[in-house]
Amino acid sequence: MTEAAPAVRSVLVTGGARSGKSLFAEGLIRASGREPVYVATCGAFDAEMEARIARHRDQRGPGWTTIEEQRAVAEVIAREAAPDRAVLVDCLTLWLSNCLFAEADIPAEVAALAESVRGAAGPVVLVTNEVGSGIVPENALARRFRDEQGRLNRMMAQACEAAVLVAAGLPLVLKPNASQPEIRL
Image (tube, rainbow, N blue to C red; front, side, top):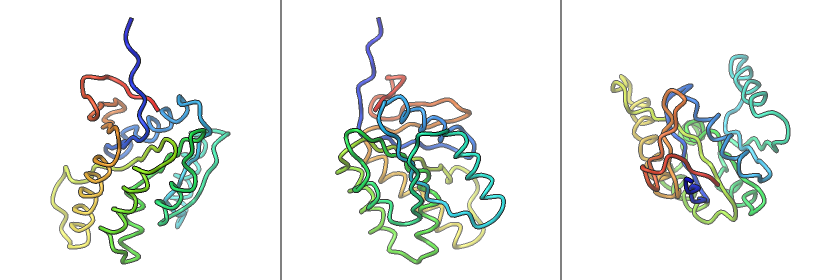
């Protein structure tokens, strides 16, 4: 008989585009048995993004409370996380873009987000992208974004009790124990 994975309160789920991050994160929330809360950080600025949002909504199915918040994610976590609710933030990459375009104090925003995750009254799952594994971007804004995303991911991995890399639909537990094949909320 295998021993069940220990429960964690916070999970960072990272990986490349279309790697299965959101599906994995949604599965963690569903398996927790708690009321699911989805924090959407993306605005629908064009038809293609509207279609992406609709696909994500259909993928989740009914029963999720959806909160659309492009910037104040730390406040949403503080308000919504509870022992009987599990909060999924999808995704930090778009949140960071929103902060950059608003010319926000990125280190302060990231610190506030990390603190909200550490102090959350219930489980929190954060989805983010790995963007720094490719070529060096050719323009200053893209290089700044790549660098800020790397720092954001590092800070959130430190703030969360668990971290999972999803590649080709396969989750790899990075933290707390890479030899533990699964995690649960």
